[in-house]
Length: 184
Image (tube, rainbow, N blue to C red; front, side):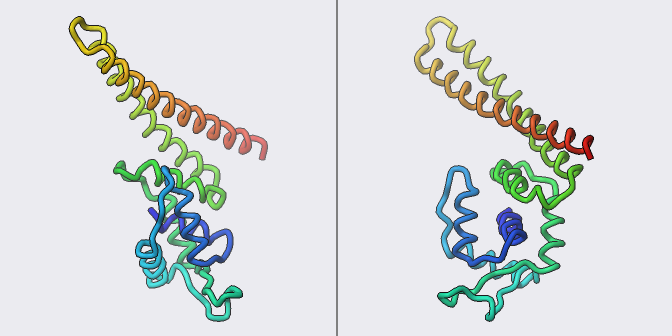
């Protein structure tokens, strides 16, 4: 997952490990600190795969090596963009990382990724709506801790509102891309 973000960043321009770490930290939700112990093994792995390179001649003013993407890295980036996202603990991040590299792929693939993400979120939305209904029923039963269940329902409302906003945004993006394709 981090490989995709690193390669996407290097598709736009060459940069140092420090700048790549800032990109990675800012891409995470919630924002997280990324240690050198995470970043540099990842960069080594990408270099060993032939996806990135570091040139001695391509250093900044402090002597920091600047990474660049290779043709193999471009190929691997394209492969990662088309690879299905596993529904694990990091699936939401994976889709957001893919969105950062969308301008490097064609509109058909962009739409496919956005639709897949929307479908995953819609499935979660369906589940959370069911949980909210169940909690509402429990809240409304006599003899229950109404205040406890009220906050559980409010918590579900927060999650549902967030999911609906994401789904709405994705649907708007899909329509926008489709409209741009019609104009071409």
